[in-house]
Length: 301
View 1 (cartoon, rainbow, N blue to C red):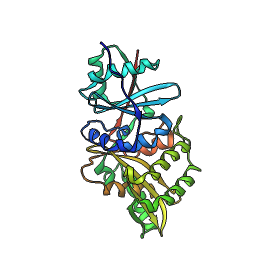
View 2 (cartoon, one colour):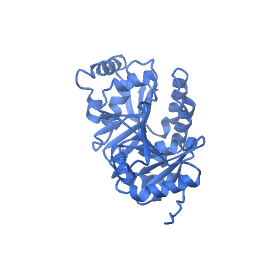
View 3 (cartoon, rainbow, N blue to C red):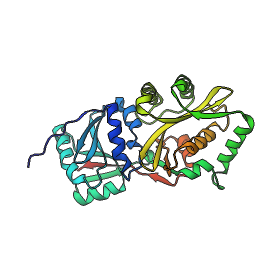
């Protein structure tokens, strides 16, 4: 049987509504469903998109490898796998699938037993939190975070948290540049330089991407900011959070107060990966995640 070729094209800002419609009905909560991430990092992966069998499929390029990620493929993997496999084989590649969650793995194993090897790497697990826990910092485990936030409020009683808008972008860029001078490099391609390039894309296309963000200011000076967007209907993904560490407790305050401002439909907050960075791992674990969300890769054997 002849398999119809897939017509991939470069990811465009106009793809955002279609992705959000599909993702809203998906059970998947991982950060790869956030269009802000897909668009911001497309410079690194040459991200392409196509609609296949009721799914929205992305083709990613890294070095000499090609991989695929599908949105709303649940129940549609039987229509997707063979066509993606044919596309990969045309490029001289085995089929590689990225960003799979447990329900995807179960379905793919049932449809194609023995066809794929599966692998999940701890460094790329997303940290998933209950929104209520981050918004209240209640309980003994989060007492150190409450203490940090309370100390910040005592030191800077006139601090202000407000929505992040275009008028704040220049200050956000400046704070990011200062932050990058004192923090550890990312893993592989995810270094501070690449992160700043992804952030610059978001800042340059702020209105089209429509991120939701917040700023924290003391005496008018920006000391922290954050932004993100939805993954699915009940999960909000925090893409970026930066703070001036000279202001003790700034991270605790921007994290808490931003989550408080999110629409109540978001029961979960995804704060993305730690990339194997020891300091970042300690920080993310200290907020007591409810789940380390595995993103599984499948490679055709």
